[in-house]
Length: 510
Image (cartoon, rainbow, N blue to C red; front, side):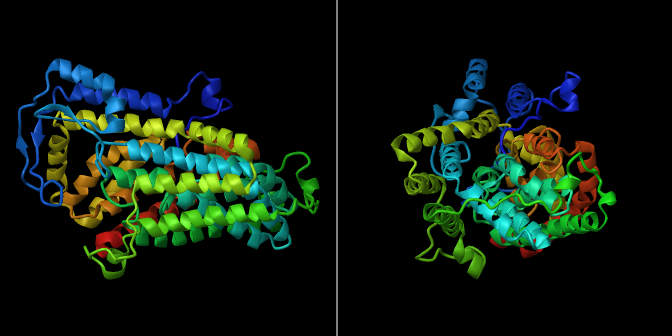
């Protein structure tokens, strides 16, 4: 999961006394800055059409109805208002949250906690670790096939649930295994980092990227999933080609390794790492429940009528159209079922339940704080003013150019706000309606955002996943950057091409 990330204490910046601010700190300054800017940005509003979206060209200036005390009150209540969806109007502050409401984040908040419980419960059973270990051991004599399979598994984790911090536990298995097969530490690190990273970059239903961004953009998680699936297959294949190309080179000529070998590394070649423990029937059942939960999630959020018929077709009778409350309930129920199957016991199940929610509370709070910024802007009636200025800028641009610009604009935002969910919550309320003016689907704006967030988090030194993984693999950051830069260029070009293709496809397919 890509959440609030900070570099570990071993980085060069830390030794020099500098530490990049966390997402919480950045969002605090963003909140205060936006609050101050709301005093000088003129208030204004668009007329709202029958579809609930701003009507292009209908913007008009209005007088703000908020007093200074109202604004001070809002500043201190911003995270709470962001969580519960409080909008100011003629009768003052009103609420509460309704499903799909751009202001409220409470459903997404609890959905993130439910995902945390589900993932932590699965990890606690040991099924994932044993499964990967047994697969790796079984394919140890077909090393290139092993690299491909492992990268696909990590990529699947990235595209479905934003696998990130969870990858840190696999370095102890993958690094010695790859060394024993004649590869270097960079190959092992790349399998994990690039595999999961590219999967997250091309998220299909990742709740922390696609889910949060779709909620903020007021669309279904399944909107645009066809294009994202094609992107996932293509970019994962390119990443696998890139890593296996380097792996083959190092296997043939170890002296061509970019990172070299530590004492004892070469002695591990051909050394058996031992037979892993057998998977129990309960662990196999856990894996099945884990996989089927995501299958049901994907099925439930896809707007099947639009995908199969195109346009705004009426939903099929069997189409679930689930949103965040139903998805949260799904993952909580699945987590309990996994705990029961894994025989964690009453105490183990309840302790893991609380631990899982606690581990993910940071991501949930980031969403509430970032949504508070949106509430401040909307209550001060400055959001439409900003949209109007941007509408004038994009009105004469082509849809293809706009889609690529959305991708490029989100790259520095992803660096400044390393939390993917915080980035989505902060940017989508502005960028998604802007797509309406440029005749670009909101789902494509979401795809542009998550692609930018993903490509940055492949290499950013502010990510504990990147820096922590490299420390565990004992690979220098400078050498990793030298290795991955060509791949970043390829991924950048391919993403731009897919976004242009998305403008051609249009509708919910993109």
